[in-house]
Length: 178
Ligand code: 5GP
Image 1 (tube, rainbow, N blue to C red):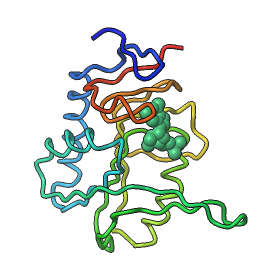
Image 2 (image 1 turned 45 degrees about the vertical axis):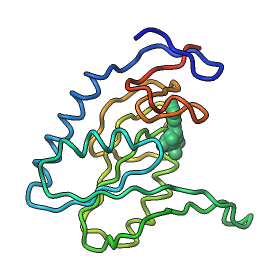
Image 3 (image 1 turned 180 degrees about the vertical axis):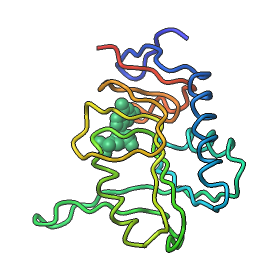
Image 4 (image 1 turned 90 degrees about the vertical axis):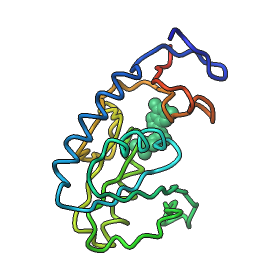
């Protein structure tokens, strides 16, 4: 694939389908080993992670459950700032081996706010799998237990990731041309 246009911006190929699929197989291999005798609950964060979560889940050969949630940010009072709420998290996490599935960790803000909420429910373990990480953008350091690719601090689209609503259906990952 060559360059593509999404809305008003031009993007160039960055991670192709076979690179993504190959890396997902490797991650799944590790998960299959690490959770061989467990029944983990995968919690995928919508919207961006739907494609990654689907492809990853297909590679799992263990007993595993998955649920999809959406994170919404509501404005609270001035003193509390905004409050991050998980929509659709109807599972009991107590004593469960939980694995969060995220498309991309950028500043780390989303997960740094969400993880304490999950820990509050006392899962037996809590790990993170992310397809992409932008180390240079880190503001809130997050330990990513299973990572697809470390990428530069550039805006990417495709493979579930959008630019202003569009581009999620592109099967490969493209990088903004600046
Ligand atoms: P954080 O809270 O770590 O700063 O941001 C995480 C979220 O920001 C991701 O789940 C994703 O929705 C969005 N995001 C961060 N970087 C990118 C990017 O390069 N492209 C797209 N499409 N979304 C991004």
